[in-house]
Length: 268
Image (tube, rainbow, N blue to C red; front, side, top):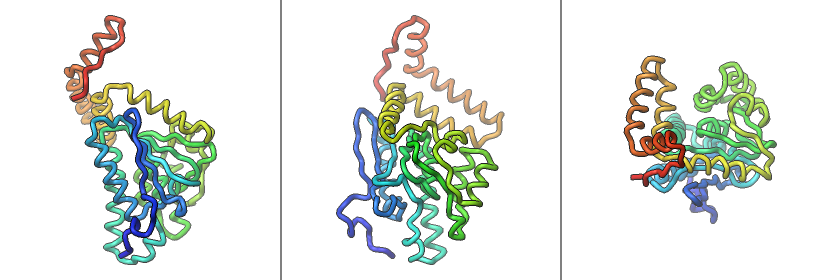
């Protein structure tokens, strides 16, 4: 078992700052292209759990320090532990972090610059939204080392079509930001100099909306995707009914009818 990473480095593996309801998490292993080591996954998962229960947090932004967003799993760490049980636990831990992103009530935005490969591309695909710099590039390149990116495939195929996904998975080739935008992997592509401003604008739009409606909507969004059409409509109708009887929606509808700005009730 490797020594705890935090013991061998002066810098924290995950940087966190919050402002105006937006929490920024930055993967901080720039010398390793922010590879997702065991310790990085543990710290990211713990941070997401804390934020999920923080009523003041409205939006989460995940980015990377240095030249890359995230280069996927730490292959050196994986190679040093050639045991089936180790790999099973590692990929289960990664899946738990990815699922936490989609089950937490706050929308999560990927801030992508540089490369996003393998589990790094999975992280982009898992986030609810993604904004990329023009020079960003994306790949699920495990196949180049003899490892099919099975876990990243789960997120990737739920973002883009089957044939584009499979092509990326079996060739390991990179796509640029423009192609990622065309395929629906990211929401926006902007010059690197405009990346933070674009994310700030998107975050502010979301933070201005009633948090109950956003959190209910996010939960419904992912649950209905895995259902048949009849069950999806049943769940959607029930969600909308519960949303509608809440004071937030009552105030919003009343404001719309009376052509005034809503006076949102305080959360809680």
